[in-house]
Length: 441
Image 1 (cartoon, rainbow, N blue to C red):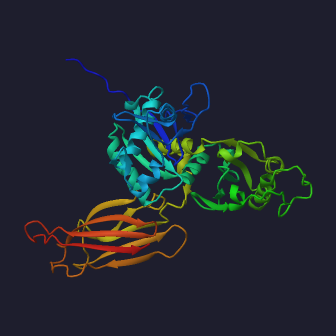
Image 2: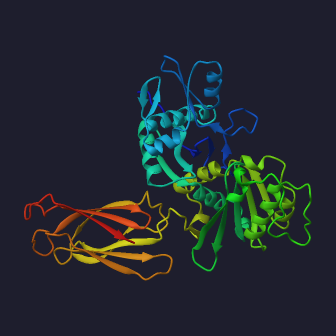
């Protein structure tokens, strides 16, 4: 008999999915850091335009820069904004035919992974983490549909926000990078600048990390006046230069507001807006006693780290707890009968992404017709109990009111609970009744 060895799945992929551009980074579990895929070997061409071209009159599709080349040759129809179309569920019309936007997005992802296959064989991918600026229920549902269309031989697929990827990147950085806060400035040169400050509360165990964000529309291109103006405030040792770019002055003011002290040890500039040589005074200020990094592949690297943390978590991960905008901030448990005893059973854990948090359990209702939820805030609020009583639940002898409970999150702060009457074997037949509840947590 001939035996063939199945290749070991060892690659973790971070896929930064954007409206205009996307990126892919990958790593081995024991690699020092992720590597970002470049569309031009030997160069740092990381951005893949999020677009497709369908060849006129044929079922041939091209993605990224190749899609642009075929359009330049007059060979087809260019399809852009496929990510936003997938989120909105908006069909895309091409040559008079409507296409499912999630299937088009899946096609784009599949073609990107085909490009990556020259460095990472698809049958050796263990985990993919999609990261995006917007990560909410609509995004997750769209990506679940994309996952269904892909039908890839991948063990696990997850979703996370850009801010979560930023945290992952910092978590996997040297310990010296965790001594003080970190700041990330994202600017595309057209829209408002976003500033994220990652802060560590070292007074707790584990250390709680959280991100405070702010947007600065004064750096949007439409908000920049033709005439130069003085900044709101300039440090005494930095004199305003009459030849200074207005963006430089405004950015200096932002940095002085966001980083007025030495509590920030590392700063990251990402986005097309930082490529031009306009930062002078602002750089001189922020580089004083701080490490400053310029690049555009932090999110895809952070997502690759996220895949590693989920599949092969390093010991350092247990020492930190990230309280991000998509994280559950409370533990949810249940007081119910199991094996004849009323006791507490944990169900959902604080720190999970709310859109991924769900559980299915079976319980016997206490008192014959009720179940008690226990909500324990991690942020220091009061532990509280919510008693759930299904209306018109059939009268049953104590210990025979068996239900199936499905827990999921409607939003970050709202729990959906579905109870289904299971009966109790031959003693009590199931009525098939189902009850739905929404609970604020």
